[in-house]
Length: 376
Image (tube, rainbow, N blue to C red; front, side, top):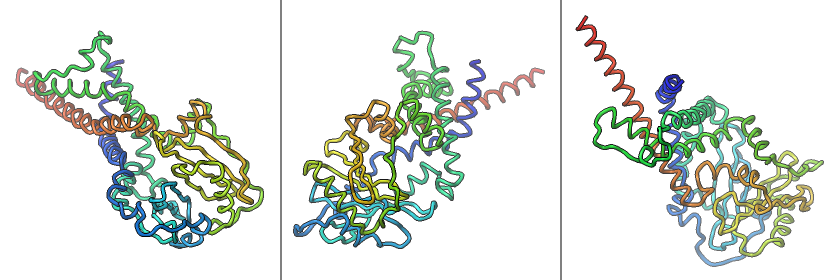
């Protein structure tokens, strides 16, 4: 049994290890992308010049909604901090067209532009999710990364089994690295100890990555967590036009009346396909980006139809709605995010040591055969 698991572990590491290493490294690079781009683009995310009244969301959408005929407005993020510009996401009309994020001046609707580094991190994200292969989510890259995520789950579980010491409650087998060893024994020791340190984190990364890979997996996890989303009933009649629709002004007025002035950030998700309008409010002191209160409004008349407060969700719903934050570790705040980044970077080391051990093993086997032939 152990020999079979070890052989599969070795084979998957050699075949998909490089893909897993690329995904892990690019994932680590994406962990702090927002903070890095904000730091590189103070002239984009911060307003300068004289103070002036802000436009209402519906008036602003009327001015910028047609900024590019190839894209449609998907969401608008409004900040209670009057020194910040507002963020607009434009979604591609075709599956192969990626979304674009631009910043706008809420005083006059002027397009400021994208943050520095946006193109670079877009490329890194494409590599992380689709290996930058054609078709993006509809292409072969998504299937390859999904299989790689399954491999991560197996490699983590089998690694724990193969690593399990005879005295599991003794700290030394789990944490001690013997640098007196040389060659293959040292690499094996490093691979086992460092892999043992991060095995649980690798398992979390693999299991959460599958959330975006397979619809059946996501549905199964939602049922397991008792977190199947209950969506408000869609409007019976067709929704108003997305661009410049007066209903967004009504919706914003009703939302603004329900929250304090220092609400943090509020993202308006444009209504489409008869679905209600949703506003996700993220408090300024939130631990991570998915600790949101969601407000739903009828797209016909702006009537509020549902409020989904974060504090009222059960544990399963909290995890399900924060799966992205669990995946990158920020569910536990900045310390969890840093730990997940370190574990992701260690994957490349595991791939390198595992591959090197394989070649050392092959060379040693070849030398043994040569000696056996010489004796014969």
